[in-house]
Length: 287
Image 1 (cartoon, rainbow, N blue to C red):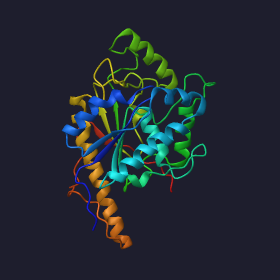
Image 2 (image 1 turned 30 degrees about the vertical axis):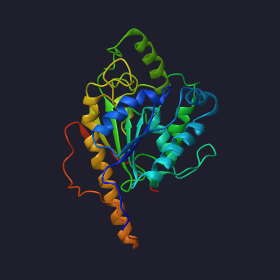
Image 3 (image 1 turned 180 degrees about the vertical axis):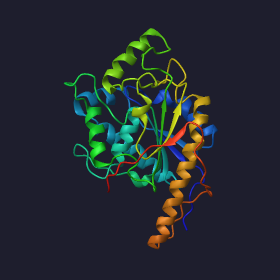
């Protein structure tokens, strides 16, 4: 039986137009909560700007490389946290088929994928603007919809309902203007509340455990966001629990195949989902 880590090595994949440095405070907060290590994928502003012209393929490769390198030093599958577009990048890296000619298939390296404010469905406001993110989301829906690799890879999606459908974002005017632009990229569902950019309905991944937070904004600056200390406390325990559950499923699968590797760091007792946590319906597509 090979030794595994009892706590997860975390990889953070940041959101559109962010820098790794934006996630340094979040890294420290996760380490204080018991993460074995925290790696931030080296996706920089030029990489995101290049996506406008080159699509999401290059970003996918950078995210996948960070996952592969972290897995080499980890004793067990990783817990990957994708913020906003970072969640789409992670899902592309996990996909079983090549995306835009690039195939990496890192699903086996990931014990749990957590998406924070990730738009799993995009409907740009302007029909003529079929941008890279919309193409990627549509492709994922065809090739690896929802919690595709469950139960041996777990999924947790997290969204917010702080900002009502009236689109009055409780923050400063520059951030409100950016929010309006980004909402036109993501699309909106009439009457749906969200985090100022992504509606909670779009942040839900089919088949995944979902946590709806009532008081969180999308970005890393200008208000409470998914990576703040008191907010992490509300999704991190569920993330670790789902990671443990997936590793337990891998152990059972390995025994069924006659292999000896154990991925069961702790015993996990099934329990009711906490308040604000649901499990979305899984698509009826088969693998």
